[in-house]
Amino acid sequence: MQITQDAVVLIHYTLTDDSGKTIDSSSGGEPLAYLHGNGNLIPGLERALEGKQSGDAVSVKISPAEGYGEYDKALVQSIPKRALKGIGNVYVGMQLQAQSDQGARAVTVTHVVGDMVTIDANHPLAGQNLNFEVKIEDVRAATEEELAHGHVHGPGGHHHG
Ligand code: ZN
Image (tube, rainbow, N blue to C red; front, side, top):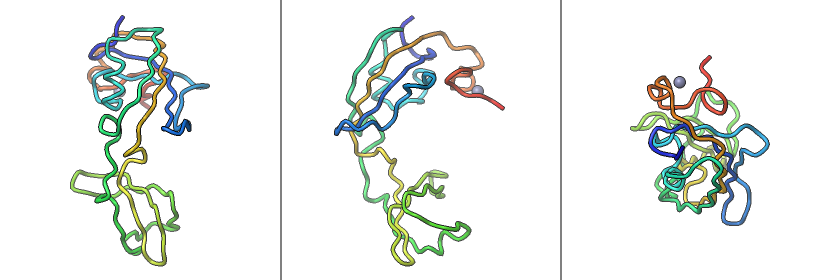
């Protein structure tokens, strides 16, 4: 079966940056399962996989616009440490949830200088080309429950506790 809208797709993938460094990989674990065409993967990767089938290998370079977005300096802010009250030890690399107009958003602490903390709301992979090597392990039709939830159940997918 080909990968089309609402297909359940199982893939093994390796993601590297332009220097060849591995950022993420499913190798050694179970394949990633996702529901195609439901915004579960970045747009550029879904487009590259459209129409492919089980056994196919796909190699694709995805630009920031089709990946996690361009790096936006306006999303970097300096705030006083006291604005983070309730959070004990603030350190570089720490991930926090910040409230914004669009709801909760993940931010990363990038600098701590004296009483000032710099937080960056860009996705950690914003502004980077993403080089994916993908092997398509399986393609199947989604169940009605999976379609209703917008994600895959079972191995490699969501587990409801
Ligand atoms: Zn579910």
